[in-house]
Length: 173
Image (cartoon, rainbow, N blue to C red; front, side, top):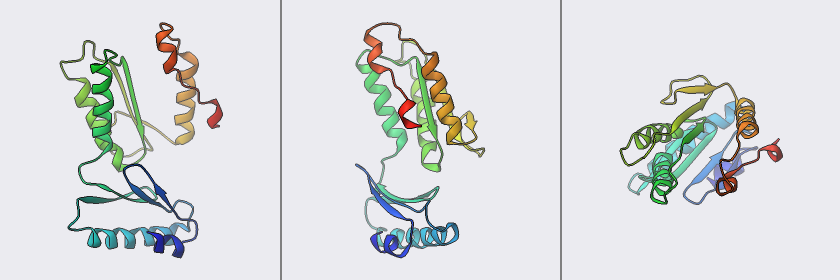
């Protein structure tokens, strides 16, 4: 990835806790896309016998451990909430790329599980109009921000205990 970053102005590598991601959204669109395809092919070849997967997303190439996806993380978060006695009454997942599809599928499967005392409201939303397991879509990231600000402005905590979960999006503008 480092060689592709050096060869592609406007690209960079992000080190996540469970993945390495090569970003090319700030590179020349045609050259960045070409480099991403080449990097994807190279990594798939080099990592063919390793327990890793290489994924091409929107302006990214990601390498992560095999078997790890956003769906598993969503399941873990929801099951932890239920096990801690705090089952959700509302679940919202928003994503803009193919790697988010596991998450959309997972939340729908997890919330229909009989261990939940009350079935939560589900809002699975993809950014951009495209085929998706999400029921809803928003046109762009600006619409996501408007939605989150609207939710924040209209929500009132039911008790002091829930006040710790309030989120503000004002500083992200």
